[in-house]
Length: 173
Length: 175
Image (cartoon, rainbow over all chains, first blue to last red; front, side):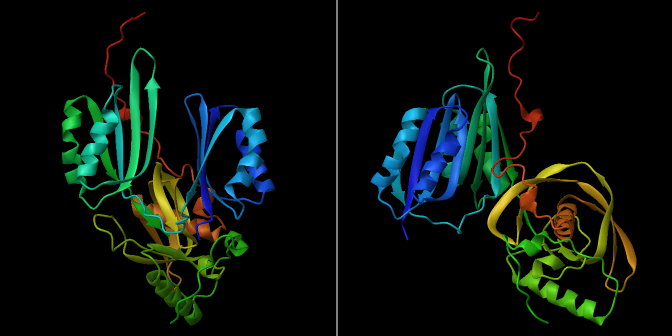
C-alpha cells in the first residue's frame, strides 16, 4: 500500500511544535510512521511519514492553522512505505576538521566510489565563529573491508581532515 | 526438541521478572535444548533468554563463538546468572529477537565477572569482556523484565569521541 506521505515542516525553533503538529494530524486520523525531528541551527525540522486515507488537501487544511501560528513551511510528497525491511548499517565513518567548503563532497565521493551506501549522515559545525570545526558522522552499508575504505579516505587525512572508519557491530540477543 | 515461539514487544510478559531455577532436572535440560534450538533458528542471535519464549525462570544462553576475533567462552548455558563485578563502559549497537527490525545504541559495562550455575547446578565464575559481556548483560536484563529499548541512548549516533577532535590552531588571542 502506498497510502504514505512524507511531510516536511521547517520553521524557527520554539517549544511546542511537535505536539501541535502531531495533534493536528491525529485529529484527521493520520497514523505517524518513521520520523526525523531535529533542530538544525535555529530551525526546527521535521521529516515524518504519515499514513492516511485522506487526500493531501485534508492534511494541508488540518495543518494550515498550526503552520500559520508557528511559522512553519510545509511540503508534502507521496511515498512508498517500505517499512520493516531496513538495511542495517555496518560501517561508521567519523569525520572532523577545520571547516571549509568541500569536506562532505570529498568524503562522500571517496565512499561512493567504493559503492558505500549512506544510510544516515549527521553533521554539526562546532567550535566558534573564529575557528569553526566541522564534524560529521556517517553510518552506512558497505561490502568493502575497513582497510579498503580507510585506504580510499587516506588522502583526506593529508588535507587536514580527520577520518575514522569503524565497524558497527550489532549484538542481537 | 522444539522451536519455541518468541514473544515480541509490546507483549507485556516481556516485562515480567523471572524466578530463580531451583530444580536442576531433566525438564530443565529439555527446556534448555529447546531454547538453544530456538536461538539457532532465528536471525544470527548470539543470545536468548528464557522469558523471550514465555518461560519465566532465570535461564539464558550466550554463544559468541561464531564471531571472528571475539574473545568468548563458547556456548554458555547460564542458570541464575549474576554479575558480581563490572568495570568500564562503552556504547554499542544492539538488536533483539523480541524487537524485530530495530537497533539502538546502549551503554554496557566492558568487563564483567559473572557467577552462574550450569544445567547440573554447578557454580562457575567467568571473566568476560566486550561483545560477550554485552550479550550477557542484554540477556540478564530480560530476566529482570528489561529490554534494550528501555536503555537506548541514541538510535542513530554513538558518543562522539573527544580525543578525535582536531586541534588545528594555536590560540590567536592568548589571554
